[in-house]
Length: 395
Ligand code: AMP
Image 1 (tube, rainbow, N blue to C red):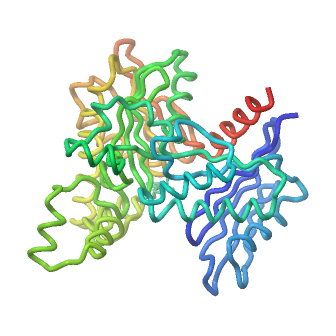
Image 2: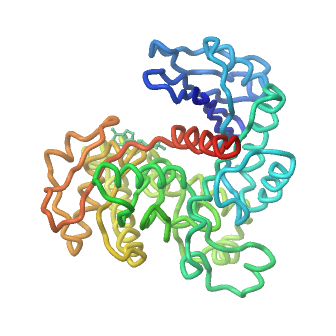
């Protein structure tokens, strides 16, 4: 029997989990423990009947929260744990079985992802404590992009910064870009097509994928580079930090905070980072909301056009993530900014493809690139990579 995998995505105050069986028709048990470490920590999720539950968690650290999650697995114990790890640096080009050496390497990479890797490691420590005999696998957000050629991953900076400090572009959202591009191949009956993928959620990134390999992507050393996002600025003039420091006396911490948490859709609209609310507000004439949506869509199109340079042939564009899967308005605006791609949007198909629907939204002209909406499945991909690694190790 193929192993069932508990997928764990651990943040500093949250644990997202999903128990995924390889057997068909077994429902996923999934949920989220949040606000850990605070007095109003909660665990929410769905049971095997699809019923939602919510419970308060008291006095809760990551290990206690995982114990509460275990109680919600209805007696179905996992055979392995798959961890989402944000940064794998250059060492990890694919998933890895976690031992002390791998855990130490993830810790070393924390300098490149100080907000994420230490939190991910807390999850590893807690699950190792709880399930000492189960294999634990690290699946890295950066690994899929390790196929980028140097012309795409190097910054035009002094060589020593790369050689001695690992300063280069890494890219993120790898499991999502990998999953949707593979799915686009399958749905289009292509073997390794040329895809531009747009993961548009609270975090946003694009990627250029050819024959199943990532050739370029919009995020860089950190997940701040590239597209405008929910609260992240994306690309700004590299001199902005110096300018804000000299002219306004802002500290590095303040600049970092504004660019990561006070910018993007939230900062530009002055209203919210939630695209649904922005679309409603723009409809009612809110200027800030309108501008935020305009800049957001234009920058996505600009990024897709730039990344098309990486592809020998463009077979299509794939939209995914909360916004990519649910906003016909954003998809239409992005496509409208790319007239030279001769895309041809089917407006009716675009309008009806929301809420988890997977569909093709172009006019199906044989010479035109395809437009796909494909709901992402990062947890499913992490479970699949975990299984694959275990199978190889047992072979
Ligand atoms: P994610 O990070 O992938 O969960 O995506 C979150 C983003 O998706 C938020 O900006 C939401 O407002 C957006 N989103 C979810 N549903 C819709 C919808 N029906 N229309 C527009 N945006 C949506």
